[in-house]
Every structure is written in structure tokens, then in C-alpha cells.
Image (tube, each protein chain N blue to C red):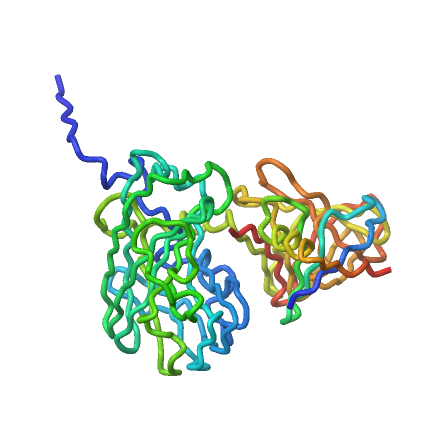
Length: 58
Length: 363
């Protein structure tokens, strides 16, 4: 089961429009909030199922 | 005066007068991710040859996958699958497919959903360790319709050719989403094979996606499966495989996956600049426009070399700076680092062996 976590704000840009996914094998993915991206589509589906990403590291 | 003769030909086997093969990397030439992978089967994904995905669920079966040079005359590569963990107790929800999804806007020559819908033919070279029968499904993702068939495998390379009817129902969107999912069913539970195989176009019925009489690839650790020369073309018969140069295939595949990597002796890199003591940005220019804003993933370590400054970091910590819109010809990325001097220029360098940065926009 993959886990999702939000990114901390960028010092210069502010909010980051991506989410971090960590897979079972430890691989890490930065998924852009872009409707055509199939990883983002899966993330939206995961949210629709009532899940919530972990808060960003501080 | 010269006379130019124009030979008249039918349209059944002409895919718009250009390239015939609607699939990419059908000869398994390109393998940007890896040339082999072990323990495949726990989750879906792309492991070896570009554009060819393992789609699986709920099975304990595992396999090794490789870009293999065992191939029929005229080819140099195939995809090989070898069962390493058998699964003979098949639960209803198990499935395992080798598949490629074709971008919808590349399928318009099929005239699907019109009264002129074209027949099309799927062909490929295949062999295995023993006789077997597997399933084929053409899944129209825009209209959730499918048409299916089966094919036989022997211990020798044989070319399989299957012609499918045109479908006058359900036009394929002219966009960058998934159009056809061309799937080879190698293992399936009753959820997928307890009905009647859908040999004519129909709305998806899960139980009709493959045949209950098919072989399970996971029935023994002796089981192997080899495939290459995969072609899907408009028309009622298979023509010779359409060979493309490595450069053409690589460029096609890089619309969906692009990888930057370097060994310790390389200075492959991405130019950038420092925007603060702890933040640097780089601009990646893709060799061809990607299908969508890509997901990024890194392995190993890299360095950001600025004027008089240098910092190491894990490639997995690289994130997207701005999400592009429109034609995705490049991507801004950034790293959180330390010890940088604001305003200096520099570059991301992969000096450590194994450092990679991947961009994925698969379907």
C-alpha cells in the first residue's frame, strides 16, 4: 500500500502543487497536481475513498 | 514528358498512409528503466521494456522479466517472462496482464464509433516453455467496451495474427488520454473468466474478459513466455512488421518516460541557479514533449555544483517547482539544500554511480 504526504511550502514559492507518494519498496514519487497525470488521477481516487495524506514534515 | 503512374490500392490495410504500427516499441528495442527485473508481480508497473506494463492484482505468483535477446530471425530483442513463484490456488480476484495503452489521439485512423469503423489486426511473435493458450483483450478505455480472443503458444517462435472487427459504437476521444488498452491475459481468476469470452465488441463485462480454459502462467515455475514484433494495424490482415530505427522508438517512448542518469565519470547534468541558501532550481528540457506533466522520481545521489559551492543530496528529494500546462516540453524542478549562495548559477550533476532522475507520464 502506497502512502501519500504533502510537501512543506517552498521558501520562495510557497505552496507546492505536488504530493509525495512512497511505495512499499521505498521508492518515492513526486506527483504533480495535473489532471492528465495518471498518478494524480489515482491520488484523487484515493482521496475520494475517504483517505487523507499525511501532513507535511516541519 | 514523363508519365507518373499512380497505383490504386484499397484502404483496408492503410493506416493513414503513414506508419502502420499503432503500438510503440513492438520490437522491444528500448528499455530505459532496466533490462531485467526480479520478483515482479506484487504490484503493477513498468519494469523493463518501455511502454509495456505489467498489470496485476491479488496473486502470490511472481516472475522475472527481461529484455531478452532470444528472438526470431529479424529481431534482436523480446520480452521474456519466467515464473519464479507459482500460484495454483487461484482466487476469484486474481489477474495478470502484459499490456500497452495507446494514446487516444493516435487511434483516430480506426474511425471507431462511425459507420466507417475499420477492422484492425494484432500480430506478434511468441513462444513458451510448453504449449499454452492465453487471452487477448482490446479494451476501449473511453467507452468501456472490449473485444477479446485467445492465441496459442508453442515451444518455437510463431507469428500470431488476430483480426478484430471495427466498432461502430463509441468514438475514441481525440485527446492525450488512454484509448486502447491492448492486454495479454496470462493469469486470471473467475471474476475475469467465468463468463463467455467477448469475441464481439460489447460493453465491458468483467467475467467475459478472458477464457476459463486459458493456461495460467503461474501454474509452474517451469513456465516461460517470450514475445516480440507486436504490431496493431488497420486492416484485415497482418503485414510485415514495421521496423523503426532505435532513435525513432526511443523518441516515441520518451513522450511517456524519460530518464537522466550518470556514472561517476560522467558530468551529465541539468543547468540551474540558486534562489537562496537552501533552495536551488533547475530546468529540465525534454527531448520530446511529454504526454502530460510527469511524475518525477530519483534514485541515488547527485550534487548541485554552483560557483564555489557544492552540495550533495538524495535524488529522491527533488520535487517539481512549477507544474507545466499546455505542451509539456520541459519542467522546472527544485531541491532543498544548504550552503548555497543566492544568485549563483550552477548545475545538477550525477557524479555518483547510479544517480538517476526519471520523468513518467505513462497512460
